Image 1 (cartoon, rainbow, N blue to C red):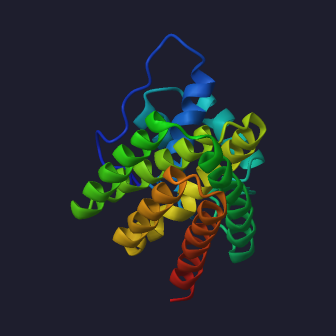
Image 2: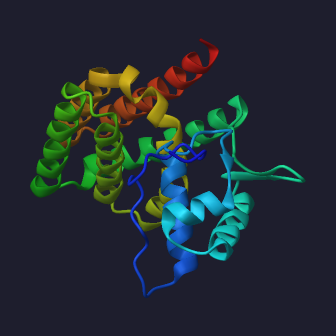
Length: 225
């Protein structure tokens, strides 16, 4: 195991041809948001390049871009480190998420059809199975897919674009509390599906707001403990 902390064989070699710079960026961002690369972890260019099967140049370029976007901190004479989010950063992001998701739930209740509701049911069942199997990675991915589906059913392109901008950071904050949220999160999802199915816009809004606020509070309680 290299000092970056990634298990041997966990990261596939990047395929070519293609925009290598983008592929390296996407790979590193995925490793950060899933917390395979942990907040505060030192990122060594040569070791990351070895994991990804590329030269150091695209890794360096990707780290610079990630630094610009706030995912990585470049420290003079020390190197690159995964950014450690502050309480204020997390609170601001998760508060904005609540606003976006609550409106998406309202619109989904107004617009969702039978097929859309069935898709939510399927994702909810998958998430419940992931929790039962204690598969945190699958639970996080399915949670993200569920919320993305609600956003899709809302039918507002601008709202979806704004949500897309915060989606990866939401996953970043949700991952460490996914096990703690556990079954409760999916019970809340079931309630949301019922409200959307009933076309109860007010109830769907209230459930989603409470659901996302619950995640925000859980994140802060975890940090405090």
